[in-house]
Image (cartoon, rainbow over all chains, first blue to last red; front, side):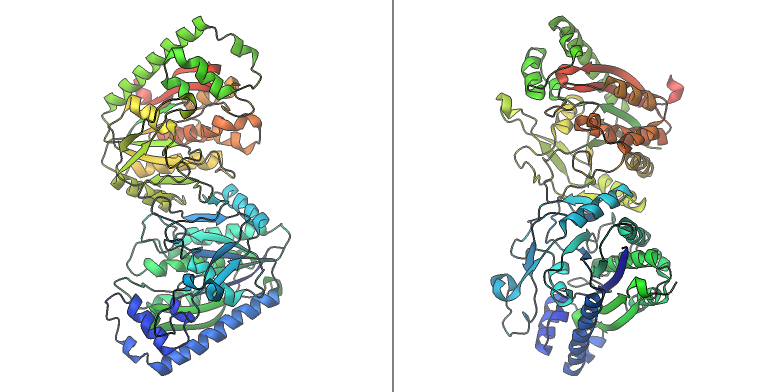
Length: 329
Length: 309
């Protein structure tokens, strides 16, 4: 059974806060001294309440769709932010194929309290444990290397930088809201996304990666789902904090909705302050889009929701590529 | 075209130790693996002669390197669990820090620590990494040297020992090509990488060389320790001498015991050959010594302008 289902979403910290106070505190933390665009002032309690409600609905929609597909494994395509990787060795692509679980912390509600709660100090409340499909991870690793992708090999959970933070937030924050059952195994495929490095995957390469993922699984047993974690445009802690590039986000969403992901190959073919930092995480969406287009060419993704939440610093989006078996040829 | 120099030398610790210690080095590398008959022909007299041949080969290699007057040297090696550990072993890693160090001492034989550092050209490395990514190579990069696999010994001895002998002061761009952690990149990929590397280096104003250190056939410490596939080595050398590095890529389409161990590091020679051929150069064999004591097929090869032949 080939890859049959895809989804992608933002994972900005604010999306896991439920109160206006939480959003305000996160804005203060991530705006890094920038005043942000004029629209920030308009994001008052009513707007934030609307964002919070829509966020819950969107994550529930993705979880329900994933549950309906009933996968055997979820390939999670995600970036790192000094969580697993240090400056001595930052991969463009890496698959963790070890047998140990991935352990980390979500941040649900951690910023809703007046005094910030540090998730790693409360593992009983914030702890997340993710199972890994070791065997299929090895198959994906081998298959991608055979197809000319220079995927770094990991068979031991990386533990570097700040052990308190543990696993990359791109994995452990959104997945508790998405996994239909906590023991659904994942395959973590880590991508360089936010590092502001010139040596980083182009949009075309991300699409190729997705096609290769689909090809690797094409003749292997099992029901495979993909998830791209991160994006859309954002620059938390950077000079453009709050300046969501809404035209870029909507263009990306339009291409996947129209079934024209090849146009996204133009992304990251040039360097720009607008496409680095968090915006680099759209690469994870491109990989999913490339895979789903390989499975069912021209497949239209469903845009579950999108809002440009400046106070979260992020263009926030959710998308589903439906069960490929149900898509008419 | 600023890629002006290319050289590849096999690596064995024996090559960097005096003749009188070859017996203990061989014992360390070969252990109790049953040896081929050819190994029995390595008499003390023959080894004395080979030691002289090695000295001459190194002297010529050093002369060639010095004459090239390089601004920087791209060094291709394959890590063996020293710089990287099981948590993150790259297929391709470009080091873009200011210096790199390693300690090649054989503690097993009582050698005292001998850490040596080498200057690196970080700026050139950043350019190379960027261009490689543009060419579709998903390189890992490092901006600080923090060896995780062996924090005490750092970079592989295959980087440290030849450079100490040949070019201790030329700024380096160290590049790791995975040969020892499965799945390793294919030989075809290594050839394509070499081409992309040459095209990246063609963009820079500096006089740059490529130096590959590792291989050829052998399995020191492994089940075929002491055995050398000289037929394979000579075929590889022949391909490189006739500008056909891409042919060599096919050897890793096959699974064979003979392709494990240091033979897996032929990927370095493929990449170096492909890069130099892209720059218009042709390989020339300086010396080949199927030295069982070294446990590797030992070759010295350089690339030159074919008009110089």
